[in-house]
Image (cartoon, rainbow, N blue to C red; front, side, top):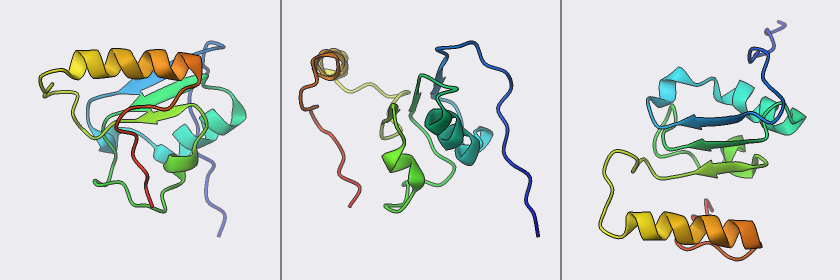
Length: 103
């Protein structure tokens, strides 16, 4: 049986994808492939089709993908400072605060 290849519409070079809506609305295989192929410069997802995301999900190793733990709608006190600190650390190639180890 040959399965169809997941597709993502034509993207502007350097496109960034962000999903804070519903995980089921994203074709995760196509997202991973677009990141692997460089059709997406980066992506950030706060939700996944199945939560919690399994430790063997290929999304954990996807290049240029930031996965947050389904917290976009409820921002705890200090979240803005945490996000700003992590963006700066990412920019400088430093360790992130509260980074998840899927294993």
